[in-house]
Image (cartoon, rainbow, N blue to C red; front, top):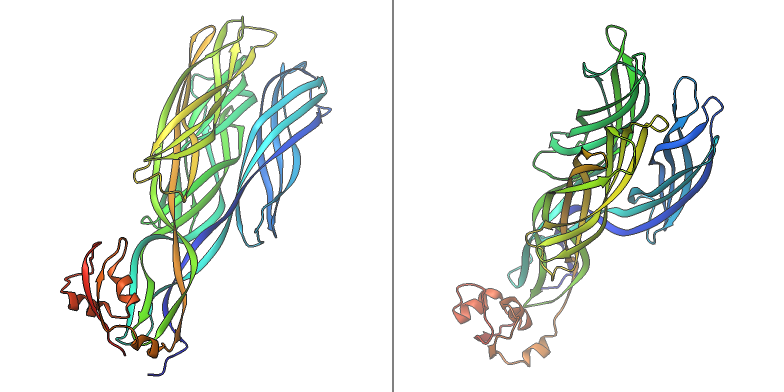
Length: 529
């Protein structure tokens, strides 16, 4: 039979995300901010907060361009006639170019900005100094399509032997970054006075979880609101309010299905709180609006049958292979743990009320070990409270609490050197209770969400070259030999090396299956053609 130049393979396309690299960059901001003319003078800064807002992320050849702003807000003691408090907000723009070798314009990049340090100081009553250190973590990804060889096409003939193997791998169905807007109205509790002026508020997502439905990703949880305001009563006393507002929203995802595997990251991009009138014309309503960034990835677990090798007894076959990386899910797990600590209040005045306690979790180190991930990081908290001090009734205290936690990962072994994972940390609960005039007990429940993959490096058959075998040299070899199985050898290896079919080898040796063991003795009878 005349040999063809190559054998065709049946193929199955699979979409994956190829991790192309990671990078970390730090941005230092140092700028002055002048108070607007209509704002009262600043006597003392009470509270501040900041948020990084990305405006543009552009991937170019070997480069990622970042553009955004540091949005900051300040609550201060003022000399105003209408109020002893003032607030202001502003933005500091920044641009940063991050070199990432191999980056291309069609690659995807995920950017996680974290404010490592924010310092807002008073230069004079009309000018502030803003200093901040921002850490940017970048993950570069490339959508890939692999054409995996699954079998030989057509009828290659009885002389051709084929080796196949089944593997479990993830197929990418969708990946996208989207936004979801959430709006609602809540009323003040009946025991609280109406709102004359909102002085300060914070909005934090708590316990946000995702669920896939047909064509949608549904989000549920809470938006925890802390607010300090002046009441409408004649005394205009400071009032504190905390509300847990149920969060229910969704984003469209055409590929979404309850049976799929998902990884969803949710981040609060912005939140606004405004006072509004109720039916009686009193400002006892709060209009809450929030914009959430939703970054999601959807996979389907597949059982793939892949062509591993091929040989022929009447021709020479050369399998040309290419390295392909697929991902196998090890585990997806949510781990929760509690932190219970006491904070010292540095004030000689009587503490009247705790107004708010805001916090954020920063993961600093992740170490894989047998059956677990060891995670360490810090919980940063800022406490705002009212004290019996006419000069400074609102005061703050900062606290940093370290933590170390273990996430159970069944199946994770030390020899699995090539794994990848995603880890998200957040706060499910954060409460405070005044113990005495100098101590506050803080209780936090931290959630660590992790998804871990084993990277499977597959030798994908790109093509199979065919050439005529050297029959003269083959005929010079003995037609029947005895063979002792070596360590690590399989029946396939022996049959291929001696140009006999698997069926022949099993029949000649009375084998019921393909299992052989080291030092087994086999009889090999060769045939040509």
